[in-house]
Length: 324
Image (tube, rainbow, N blue to C red):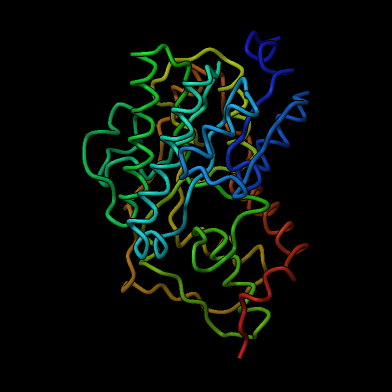
């Protein structure tokens, strides 16, 4: 048994954002490994308020923290809310990290974002390149906030011996994703568009951008497994990429989702909208070396599982359709 697992398996583990998309998967994975004292929290606790955060930590006294709470969204949401996204993510992270330090939390897992990388990072992205340029503009406020928090974990480690781990996951997808068109990421956004086209008998579906940008996608339960390993293993505060090491063009992704969902109409790419970062693909060698981690879910199989879940719960998303 891993030393870290013995240390935290029967201890209180706080999971901020624990009722959200990734949080639900992390809770499932940890419970499957025998963790019995998990404390997942959602929006009921305002982490942007320092006093409320500090009071909560003093009341609950967690032994370990997994920080997932974030204000997130796709290209449109990022573009429309740069100040809100930057402030909320900075405030939540700073308050949580400082509260953890003051309450002598034994392990802190900080989950960052691939949006922290410079817009034109050499592919595959290596962790040492994260400060070598400005992020893609539409994601910059969110990415910079998360990057600053990763640096705070490293700085606290250097000054206070803070036992923190920094993970940088790529775009995730899977069951319980956010399908709200105003804030959803590309995979749930495409699934909802094709679902609407089928349900409303539309002859075409518009996809933002040229379709030529590439992305790397990670099944949410694979990411949750990496997070559990980061909790269990002794690793440094240096950033660790979490992904698959492969990439797919958005146009091919759209075709795959349409095929699995049974959509037969046309797909039109609208180049008037931004592509975002041109390419995203991570070097995942550090994760293999430091965590013993490799993703296991192939993209097509993961899409099938996600779409199966979506279809089972499709009625929940009918309010987003607005068929004419």
